Structure formats: C-alpha cells, structure tokens
Length: 124
Image (cartoon, rainbow, N blue to C red; front, side, top):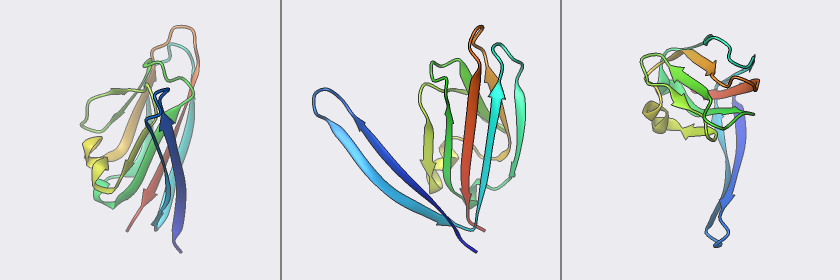
C-alpha cells in the first residue's frame, strides 16, 4: 500500500519577493519520530534504520527551537544547526546524509527545552 505525504511551503519578504508551492510525495512507507530534549541535554541517537538514502523520497526535520542551539547529524555527516526546518526531496537528501540509520540530535541551549520532529517518505 502506498503512502502519500502532502506538503506546502510559503516564504516571503517585506519587499514582496515570495515563493508559494505545494505538492505531494508518494512512496511505499513513512518513518516518523519525535523526541523531547531537555535544556543542555546530552546527544541522543535516534535509530531511524534507513540505511539507503537512495530510497528516501522526502525528508523533513524541524524543531520548536530554531535558534541554532539544536543540532542534527546523520551517520558520517557533519552536524547541522537548525535555524529553520530541513526539507529535502529525492536526490537532494544526499546533500544532508549518505546514511540515515542513526540521527544524532543535541540541544545545546542552557535554558530552553526543544522538540525535534523527523518525517521520512520511503520508496522500496
């Protein structure tokens, strides 16, 4: 049975420059995880068990704390500080990770807790 992730994006500036788009990504399955991170907590490894990013059609990672104090790191990649959501499709996922078996998340904020949410659409 196929799974469909619908998405939309609206972004713009005061000058009137803007982008507004929406669509859907259909695949064979969805991986979804959400984790709460205490302020100043140690790194946490999330076992996503997605070893082939070639099978990833859609990747979204976001947090309710987007000031750069939350970092995410895929296996073998550099950590990325979240100052906004990460939203990648198809081949672009390889720009973030070569492997999504484990995603390491870390909240370096000394006084703010954070929630990190990950949504992955898979093709088999």
